[in-house]
Image (cartoon, rainbow, N blue to C red):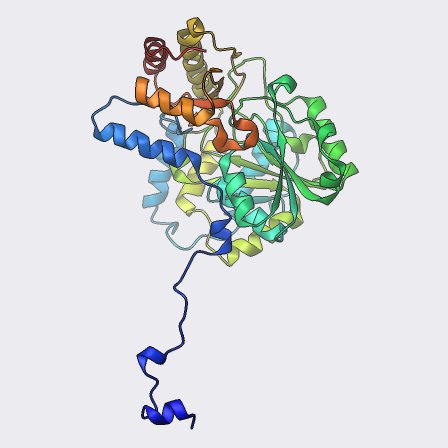
Length: 414
């Protein structure tokens, strides 16, 4: 028997116990970039506690009701005595939902998909993006990420410990990436390039020539393409109709595409989306998913089916509402001299900050402190977002006009 055990009657004293470090944060957590908007929302909440009438244009959080058919179908599915929608759902989605996804792709884009292998139900596209990174990226693998971008890409790439190379979207290029400016070594090392058009936050729109250039570039450097079309049916310009990248990579040789019900159908709280494209990539995501969670609640899937199979008048109606809101806001700030063209799509205005402000966070603070307006600082969307703020058109025309009036009274012109 070891001497120490013998001395203490076979029991190690508390003072002699091996010291185990307290449970601390993982390297993945420490590697996460700060969520810039969280700081802004904390400041907003403090203003609200103080009784300030805050106009919140910070989060892309639609304020309109979902399609009536979605609500009615959900209610019926919840009470359906013949179909048990309350059990565990399948990991990849109901066969009927995947069939509806492929039918929607065929009708909307003329793209043919196999519902059994080339469509996957998601609990929001954020879940899908995360599972794509987990199933395809090892620590140190390179991702070409077009920024400014949806902040989830920044955080989830960090959790996956990917090597992130930001490809800037600049005003001089109509906020499209300059593929020729990407360093050859970075392109050769990269596994994938992530694109999102119509773009959050810049509201930039794609062209057919641009998508052809992306496919050519991806083939040249053997890259996978991650395409995000969450805003494809929110056109603010009646002459613009968004494209799917799968219209160009029709064989699905190197593409996965995400779409969500959150923005086009104002169903962001329902958490339902889907991915389509490369069958093996989806199968790998399914493998991760089957080990981490379950699928989308079946009643919600049935509501989503009804939305996809129904007419798309709802998208045209909400697009018209956002268009009117865009025009109301831009008209209200026109005397302030901001150099901004009317966005052709999405629910955002990408506003350059006045030159007298050092950075986007400083301008964001001034808007809240002096005008009671919440916006999202561009720095939270990636390095190329600095110098801008994102205005979400998620309030009434009246409130958006008032925001412009408050900016003028506070002297917050360009």
